[in-house]
Amino acid sequence: MRKQRPGNNQNRRRRRRVFEKKADKIYFDGVVVDTLPGVRFKVKIERSNDLEPLILECNTKSILKVKRVRMVKGDRVSVELDPSDLSKGLIVSRN
Image 1: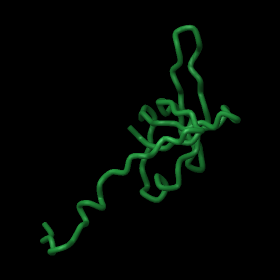
Image 2 (image 1 turned 180 degrees about the horizontal axis):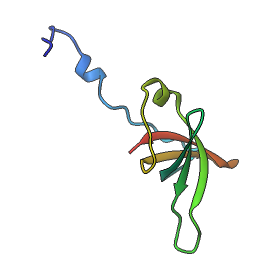
Image 3 (image 1 turned 90 degrees about the horizontal axis):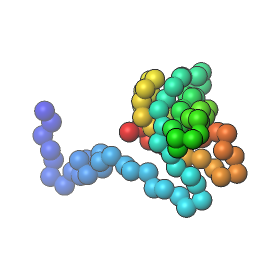
């Protein structure tokens, strides 16, 4: 175990960052259904009882690529959608 140096704020810096929701985007929670090449995923978003689930092709945010977050089938994720293009999404966090 490392000794902590006086004045070292590493523990404060390593806190988990929570993404900030943007006003002009739409956010959904979904489940990873399939992995595709090139850090892309198919995500299933459950909707109301009358509508069938929506399956989107999603990329990941660059911070998730840098941290090398591993996502597999069945992981719950948060997806950000642009209102002008609802066919593709962006995975912003893994829940």
